[in-house]
Amino acid sequence: MATVNAKANLEAISNKPFLSQMKADADYENKMILHLLENGSDSDLSLIPKKHYSTNPLVKFWNQIREIFS
Image 1 (cartoon, rainbow, N blue to C red):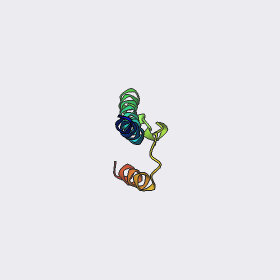
Image 2 (cartoon, one colour; image 1 turned 90 degrees about the horizontal axis):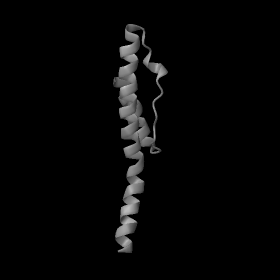
Image 3 (tube, one colour; image 1 turned 90 degrees about the vertical axis):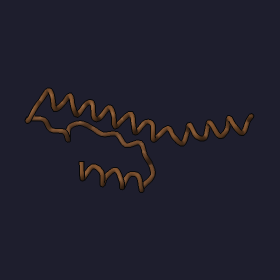
Image 4 (cartoon, one colour; image 1 turned 60 degrees about the vertical axis):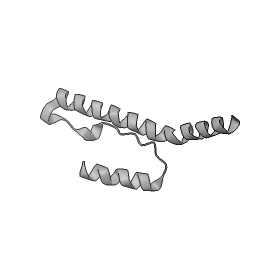
């Protein structure tokens, strides 16, 4: 039973950054939509901060590439 609990705790810890990033991305999208609706063509989306929870350099690099094309 202890090994099952240890594996569940490890999985919860390893998934935490990904789940936090998914929530942060959803919050960013909502803030971006509200900003566009409130300001229209005068909006500046660079004023909205975007959070990054990943510490993996490959994931950071991939996120930077995604930002270029979005």
